[in-house]
Length: 117
Length: 115
Image 1 (tube, rainbow over the protein chains, first blue to last red):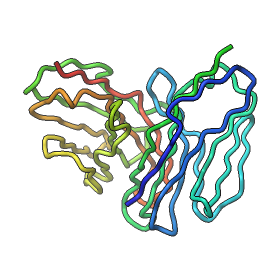
Image 2 (image 1 turned 60 degrees about the vertical axis):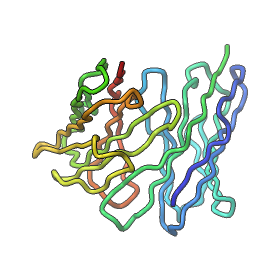
Image 3 (image 1 turned 30 degrees about the horizontal axis):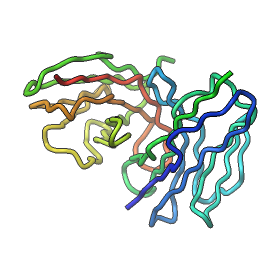
């Protein structure tokens, strides 16, 4: 069965520090998708990135970057020069069964990031 | 384009009652999934609907049910409420089901409190 582990429950940083959120996943499928979502205090999950299992290229989007390593089953997320507005809970998620008729997401427990001014 | 809407946003019920939550997906999206979020269990998948058919179901008791209408709007129902059903219920829509990699857009959730 699939599983996503986010070992860091809570991280506190000061504004402008870089921070990395860890995500380790387990799956038997060879084809799968990984996601990161952000959940601000308002509660709505905001999509950040999707990566398929065949694309191990790192990705950078502004202050955000993602490091996907199949060898260690990890999909880590780094925020460079963090800002107070980055404070939120961040979820890593896995979607398997690419050839099935559904798109179920398995989420990690989330990492609460608190950025202080 | 309007996002996913969920009604009501907040709900307070007592044990034993039943509740119905509603979700309207993004226009044109045909797949709707429901998730339950609690502090203890985190985000857990409830069910997914596509074209009025339940495509997948999570590990929840039969008290949790859902349906999807021809306009893709979805409802979920919880009967005989228990204290442990207190949670944030999130609905997500995507353009299509299957494929595993469909981006799911989430609504703001319905906060259910069972007293």
